[in-house]
Length: 164
Image (cartoon, rainbow, N blue to C red; front, side):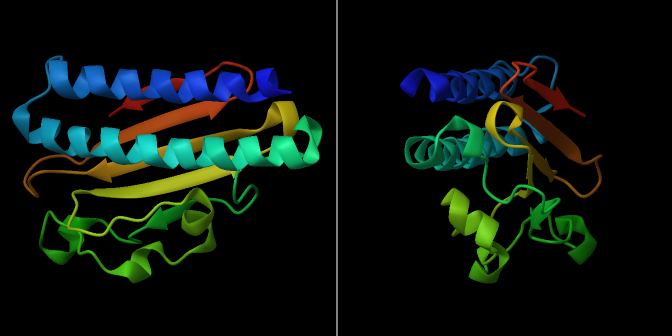
């Protein structure tokens, strides 16, 4: 049964390596974009790890065909629910209310300090069709375009990272 979810562990590692390469090698990315990307690498890895752990526990208790990622079919869950520059600052505050949604609790995810990115999560499907998407959107200056990082992960292996 462990082989059924080992793909997910390697996918989380691969996603982390993609983001790490972008953030630290700065493949043509200006320093204004690099800071939010570095933050996104850390927090998207935590979100993906939480999804992996949730799914793994479901497989152990209920089998693969009855397993799913947290909050499947609930649509996009975004915290905070606004973009930082809309309120005149590049930083989001550390209000715990941003992370009170049951999805963030199921993922074991919360940010306790100021941060640069808005984080969104969406899951769907179950068993072999289970998948999730994580988006991180933010900037290091309200005068530049928002950076958006999207991570797709599904059991069929069509995983990827998109940076806009």
